[in-house]
Length: 141
Image 1 (spheres, rainbow, N blue to C red):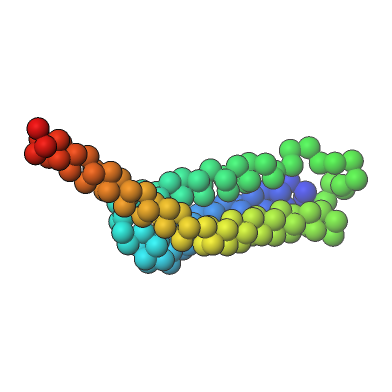
Image 2: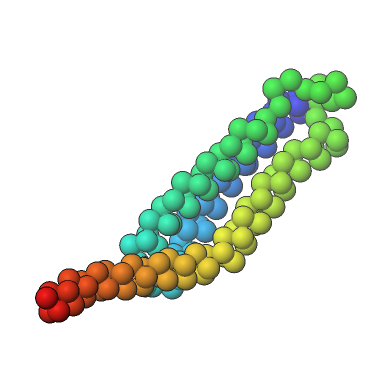
């Protein structure tokens, strides 16, 4: 097999992984995000949209970084074991990156949800405090 065919197959596998795993992760993550953002459902929906955008940016960039347009001097015209190993490492690298980023997201999402909930509570308390002030001044005058 020509090295270019192996390169095209690897790129196709990476594109398919991005296209298939993105919606899969989103579908099963919606209930988790809904639970984390139960106090702010609108913020949760916005967060999911932004995470989708980030997902496609990161993994689209990874796919664009991986193709080899000119073979290194050590490669032969036909695919060999060393070239196959390089291509397998590209796929493994993307799966590893997906796993790490997904794990970080799972760990940080509850913290982000709590911070946003606290921020919403503080905003509400500030509005309540501002509403109470003019009444206090008006009653004292």
